[in-house]
Amino acid sequence: MQDRRPAGAAGAAERDAVAGRQDLAAAGIAELRALGERVTPARRAVLRVLAETSEHLSVDDVLARADAIVPGLHRTTVYRAVETLGDLGLVTHVHPDHGPAVYHLASSLTGSGHLHVRCRRCGEIRDIPADLLDDVAARLARQIGFRLQPDHAALTGLCRTCADAADSTQAGPAEPPVDDPR
Image (cartoon, rainbow, N blue to C red; front, side, top):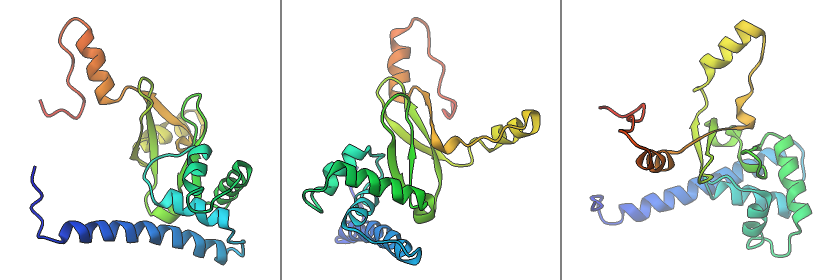
């Protein structure tokens, strides 16, 4: 499909996106200062790395990208920075299955919370609306007094691509996805 935006609009949109990501990192740094915390090169680099992506990154992924910003950072230093930023509510993490924890900026900086789903076949992690499990959480609280905290783990299943591939190898017609208008 051809881009129908006026000439220069694509460049302006990209500049706006970059500025928005830089604003997230700057907001994190401002929050560190407001909390009376040190703004170390490692903390600055971690905030910038996480602000520059919508991906969910392991500490090793953060280190690889942060090293381009502050060469020579040690893995332990990055881990401590991520941990401290998490304790301060600026970074959050999720545990996808049996793999390492992955990190992203917290909703206090991004302005939007979310939950996670992870494909058990390809490993893809996707964000889903934070309120998706509200009814389940309310029911658990009402029926058994359990307070659900779903933001710390990823729900597992099959992404559409892997589910379609699995369906095509099985006999019989596949059921359409729930959001399919058929």
